Image 1 (cartoon, one colour):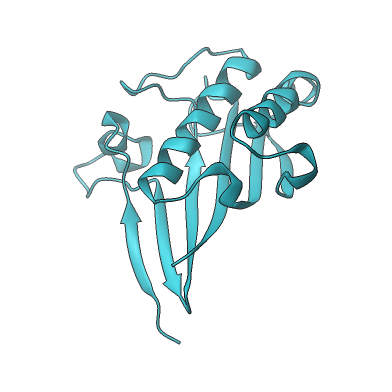
Image 2 (tube, helix red, strand yellow; image 1 turned 45 degrees about the vertical axis):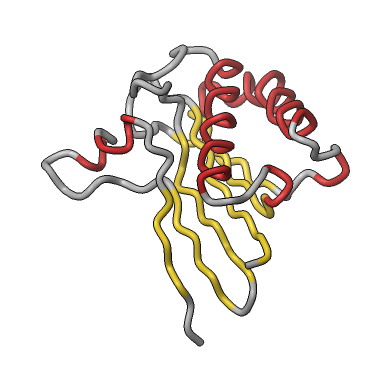
Length: 152
């Protein structure tokens, strides 16, 4: 079974300066699109609250970080020819000390983002929520990765 693999880039400055890309290696791609049997699967790497200049946005604010992460995901989807309604699975990593804030505030932002992008509550994709001790940088308190599917 053969498939075509395509790396997706949004063109954001932080893609070339991502923490895992230090030392002059090739630019990091935030997503990969696989085309197989008439369908495209988009695997979006964990998105973190970097703004367009590569700065971490709003340390200590689960609300602000969730909004920015979801907007970053939308940029990746658009760059791959997909949209929020194409998301079929979401995995959310939250630093444990902010888990309560996510459940009480961030989850509402997440649901509102989907609603604002044409996805009704009854069609929200399944999600996995994980509490973690730490993410890649101290000021990052949430990271979200997604899988989306579109027709080829």
